[in-house]
Image 1 (cartoon, one colour):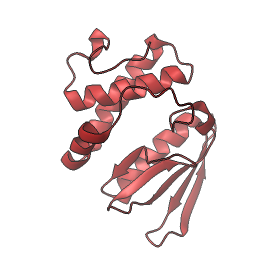
Image 2 (cartoon, one colour):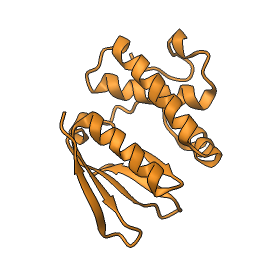
Image 3 (cartoon, rainbow, N blue to C red):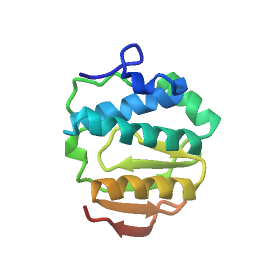
Length: 150
């Protein structure tokens, strides 16, 4: 069952709204990818807390204002399994900062203030997916490629 901000597990009730929203988004995506609810919740909660501690107030507010929690029925969504094998990219973001995005995804999964933060997050995602991380320079050229195995 997909969770929403109005219907979520009790284990998320003590999280602040932004962290809860991120945990719900991550857990829903993991369940869509085949994880069991009992496995997805602790992982999603940990990742949401890490996201919150590494995000700027601007990023958190932007996520609260624009981020989606309710899963889409559109199977082309960026959180779907077909993107699990695609490499992750760290690229300069047009609005400033650095984007972490899966190849062919409609939008970045994260936008960080610094390249170091984006690389750290990109490594986490690529390692979890067992895929490649491609890190770009400010000018758009490739800086480094790192392959992660599952």
